[in-house]
Image (cartoon, rainbow over all chains, first blue to last red; front, top):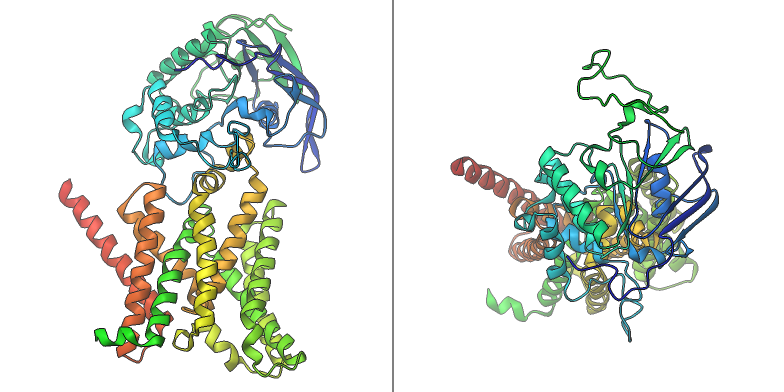
Length: 275
Length: 279
């Protein structure tokens, strides 16, 4: 895996969100959320269902519009150009289309949008045309998540964990300075979780910053530098991650588990100490 | 039989058939990808209203050939309809509702406008079912230009158009101009329909875009290969259908589509059987 920070100026902050407010269909979902991530820092964004975690990351990546507030990426106001150094891993392959696509084709699509990479008469088209070495880069990205052998397979027929790795490879192929991941562990088998934790550690060593929406810290706990907890669209905690703390102990946790008794055996027992 | 190939009319029919048959599945691939396989039908009916509007304008301008502005009218209406679809979709209206509105609005406007132009529904029949046997060299050159545009953009920007139709949210995060590319797909689909309506007619135009893609999907699981194979299948179906109608008095548009559906059934049966044998 190439070093994403090599030959690039590293800004003081990767993402700096200030008083972000977002409304969907007339209802305000985020009520002034602020969050900062520095180079190489891994921030876990936690909270109960409906707390606004996904809405926040979708706003950071440009999929949802801001109502007010500001988001700066790499020291400049967020724009399509500044997002060229951002890699986004959505919760799942939400928009899988009606035509099959191979894992390699999906990963190649991650190379698009990197404007300014090319010079000369084709510079305007850079961003909507894949680079000449797209296939090789896609293969390398798939290899970095351990599924190079699945490059030619139909993505929609892969398991949930394998699909998740394809989506991570699609983000990594951009050599991002900042990775934004929306619940990367949801519906993923243990093998893929462990592999993902290993990949995450490697990226962190190379200075890649991350904002990860998580329900539970799980195998990623040792890589998390900071936890930010959202509750009903507001930040209720921003500080060191409570070790082994799952979302079920957080103040915003709002659902029951029918399979669990009064205390789920798998549930961590450490009490919540913040905010 | 080979001597027939030197006939100018046969040459024109086959040339237009080849262009339309290979270009239509390119845009059909994106429509299937977006799960909007019936969009062609919706835009086709708006194009029909454009044909009637072209007739009305031709009558008002006192043209000797009232049909002269029919295709330009269809192009303008189809593109306008495609832009409206994208605007409505981006504002949250369901794709099925948008297509239904276009479908009914298009056919009703077509019938009303053709009446105002002093024509009858019979004048629309050629566009409803296609009339390739009356194709002129002018039609051929227009088909060449429009098919070249579809192939250049539809195939040339395949990666970007795939990214947008496959996962719009991710495409937006990469900084791709998602709205522009969505509009490009819709407008190119409209252009494809107006090119194809000369061959298969408005009612069957959607089939020529979608059926070859459906067949190709049974044979390969790669997006690029589906598109390439669908282009070959579309061209083969169209040329075969046109060639048969040279010898037998059959409606070309209907024959092409029936051939396509038969091919789909055969391929689906063969692939199911081969999978069973492999198990």
